[in-house]
Image (cartoon, rainbow, N blue to C red):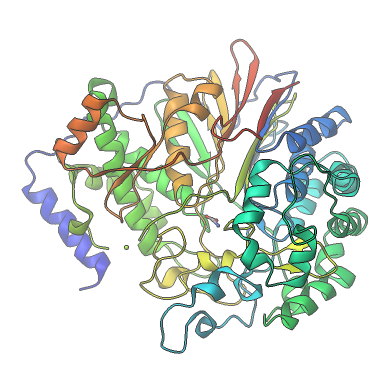
Length: 574
Ligand code: GLY
C-alpha cells in the first residue's frame, strides 16, 4: 500500500473509532474578514525590519529618495547580498508576498532558483549508491540557477517607482566603500573556512592573509560591486547574458559543474497567486508552492480553526498546535513540489473538510506518535537565509525571504563576479528516502529535473485584519514554517512587533518525532503536562531571525522589530 493510501486508511480508522476526538463547531471565527480589495488608509510613514542595520538603512534611504516599498525591497535585498552573504545574495533566490496599496493587488513573486538543464541525480550519489552530501551542499554542482537578480529587476520594473540603478545604489556604495563585517559573518567564514578554501575565488574573497576578516576592519567587495553596476545599467540581462553570464558559466564548468549560458538566459521569474486563509478575523496571505510554507501554515490554521483555543490551558493549546504541525509536515514531505512540473492535491490540502478530518484524528490529551502516521531526519536551523519586512507611507507592503540555502551557500564564488553561489540543489529530494540538511524528506514531486524549482520552506506572509496588519517572516530551514505560524498566532492574540519576534519558539516537523524547544518556552508545569501527554521535549539553542513590521490602522501607527536573538538586525520606523 502506498504511504498516502496507508495514511488515508489510518485517518479513516481514527475517524470511525475515536470517541475522544476534540472538536468545536462552529469554528472559532471572531470577526468578519477584511476583503482583499478594501482600500487601506495610508500610514503616512514607513517601517522596515531586516537582519542588518546597513540593509534597513539602505531601504530607508531609497524611500527618502521617493521610492516605494518595492524599491526599498530591492535596496535591502541587494545590500544584504553584500553585508550578509552567509544568508542570501545575488547567487541565490527569493520569495516574496506583496500588496500594492493603489489597487489592492496581492501577488507572490517567485524568484526561486531552478535546476540546470543538465542536472543528473547520479551526480549526487557516491559510487556505492549512498548520498554524496558534499556534491549536494558544496561547490558548483550544489548550485541552482540564481533567481535573485531577475527577481530584483522584476520588482523594480513592475512595482517600483525609481530606476533599478537608484535602488541598487546603496549596495554598490557599500560594496565599493567597504563595511565592517558583523560577528555573524565573521563566524560563518570561520566555520566554513575549509570549504571556502577549496575554491580560489572564494578564498580570495573571504580571507585576508589566510584569515577571516577581523572585527573593526573595513571589508570591500569590488567584484560584486561591478556585477551590481552591470545589473543596474543593463537590467536582468546584465546578469543572465553577456560578460557576467559568461564568467559564471566558465567558473562553474571549470570546477565540475554543468551550467550553460542557455540556463541563465532562460531563467524566468514567476508571479503566482498567493495562498490566502482566514483565521479568527484575519486573512493570512502567504507563499504557495514551490514553497511548502503557505500550504503547511494554511493546513495548521484550518485545523486550529475548529479548536476553541481560548478555553484551553497552555499545555493543551501547545498540544493542538504541535499535532497540527505534525500532520502538516507529513503532507509537506509527501505531496509538494514545483507547480509547473507536478500536479499537487492543493484543493484537498487546503480544504477545511480535510482539516476537519485531521483535527478529528487528534486525541485531546495525548500525543499521536508520528509512526502512526506514515513516514522521515533532523533539522539544523543555522545562520542561513534571511527575511525582511516593509510597509511604506502609502500602505504598500512586502515580505521577502531570500536565501543561498546553507550558511554561505555552496561556498563557491564564481571568479571575476564576486557572486557566491547557492547550494539550493539540496532542497530537492536528490536521493529518494534520504533527508536533506534540514531533515526533510521528499517524494517524486520534489525530484530534480532541469528547469524545475526545488521545494522551499520560505514563508513570507501578510496578516491582514480590519484593525491591524503585520508583515512577517523568518529564516531557519524547516523551522521557518513553525516560526511564522507562531508569529501569526501571537499577532492575532494582540502581541506587538517586539513581543512577536522575542517570543520563545517550539517546533515539530513530523520526524524526528520530538518537540524542539527553546530554553524557557514552557513553564515547568506546562512542560510536565506535555511530557505526560507523551511528548519528548528536545532542548535546542535559540533559532530564527524574525523581522516583523506591524500597522495599527486605528491609531495609524507602525512598529518594526528585529529578532533580539541576533544583534545585527534593525527594525526602524521613519
Ligand atoms: N533553502 C531553504 C529553503 O528554501 O527552505
